[in-house]
Image (cartoon, rainbow, N blue to C red; front, side, top):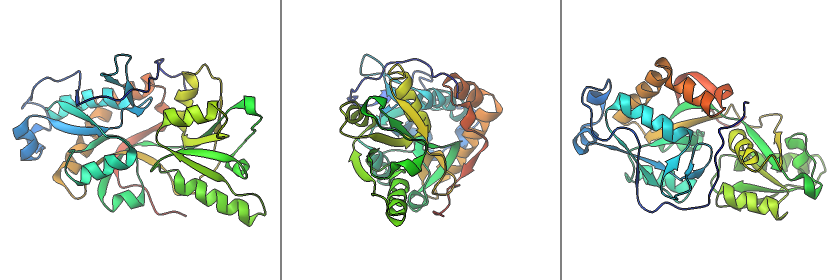
Length: 292
């Protein structure tokens, strides 16, 4: 993985919606405009949900008001093919992203959210990147790890409602079955809180998506160590956009991702943010399979 685009992380919450910095009004000549559901065409914009606290995908600039990150820039490219501006609404947590979508507060979640079979029961997952897992450890506290097998007996922090929870719980069961101490799992609200726990030595490792942890390490002068899990205890992992289950918007979002792949915007931005190793050759639909 290449060096990440440098930026600072600020623990600020956005008040109110944030408009994309791209398209300012509808463009009926855009390739996919006529395929959008009528209600989106009529209101003239599409509402996407984000937490605004998940770098390098979506996070705040220093002003505490302007969103930045890979998924924000991909949204600006998606506007060009959809023909409507993207209005980013802030959700408090990963869980509220999904509940907000199912309650029609948002039109879709551009991304990223982890594709899981459980989430597929309530929303459609339009997969646009591969996903790996890793640990972030603080060498100063004496913690050593080479893979997920070394998590036995450790205090591991994870984000609330994260896809990694069943993975670390399964590893804890494997630890006990092997006669070792279980993993003590602490669930915290966001990446910034997890990092504070690691700095203060209240937790010994953070378990999350590889790209997010590598980014956190890079903006902290590589003070920590990223340890890849080394094996996947679940089925192959993907990250996705989410749309209402069975909705007409699902096909449109699939087509939009394909256009970004075809016109080169996808590869350009994935490379800019140092995530080109996770690219998919084409978008997929509900690719995540049940646990092994």
